[in-house]
Length: 423
Image (cartoon, rainbow, N blue to C red; front, top):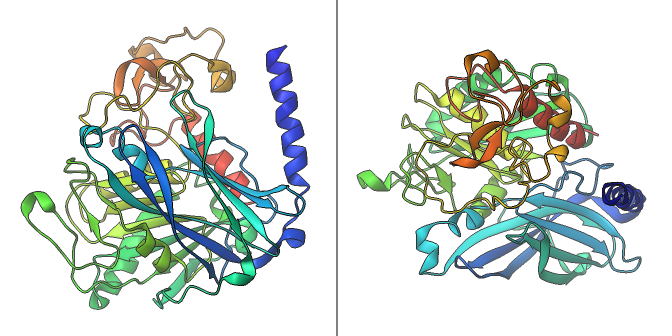
């Protein structure tokens, strides 16, 4: 009975939010809210920095509200007059990852963040929510916005760009924008070659192969003054456009940038749904954060594999399935609740996950044995721990670089996001 009631409420919510039409509530530009996450392991708050307009809206004009309930955060745009939720999206950040590190137990830090949404025609309210340890969302920030008070962002960069795959209207396609990081102006030919290699590799795997016509691909030639990136462990520091670095949270292979403002500025010259940052380095590493960005070095022997894994995080909302590699995180997941990542389960509510894709004769949990090598199951180990968390396949690109591709469950998860973003 509870399950039926829950499903009924979901249907009612979807019906209400779908009534909010793009043409009724939005102009064909974007509004960007830049803010700072500030806190430690136990506390968080948001400090507003600025609100500006941007020239393009690259997202869907029909799928305007969050459907998947992914992410550690979400925001809502509420039309002030009608009190309707006219737009919502979930996302993740570096900040919530940092909160699980030992450093966060003793110090406070700030992380830049921003959210992007269609430009409201009328006064609106933005609400930002944080997912609590128990899994529910709590309101963290609220602010009234009068779109007439804000102007086009004067700090937007003027990088040149090219569209290398054009399948149509950005409103009905998934627009991926590739940003150059650590490439000088003289190295832009290399950037284009590197990007094409990654793109070809991506479309060689499902679900991307069969969904290629749903993508537009843009390259933004965001030039840096110096080639490469920061490698703090080797005392190497470079002047680059997006301020990226290895050794994030002390992990040598974790490549990120904390300067999300610079990332947004560079991406703003084109319409986009997801951001891919290519770093001109031969060092192994990368990172991917849901509805934030995917980042990878380009010249390591495993750079292709790293890129597609990290895109699984940023675009598909997939979780890491490995459990025997060191990370900087402590208690990243609450094993007492069902994780939101579509390829991980604690078995607390497995009916919400991939149970319908399994053979009824497959045991739960499923032994990691040769006979189940190509079987959708429930294998203990995943999400950085070897006990209490389960993944759907013995090996998958979300687990190792040796896997031939994504498992059927991860393919299904990515395909759902592609479908929503291309409606």
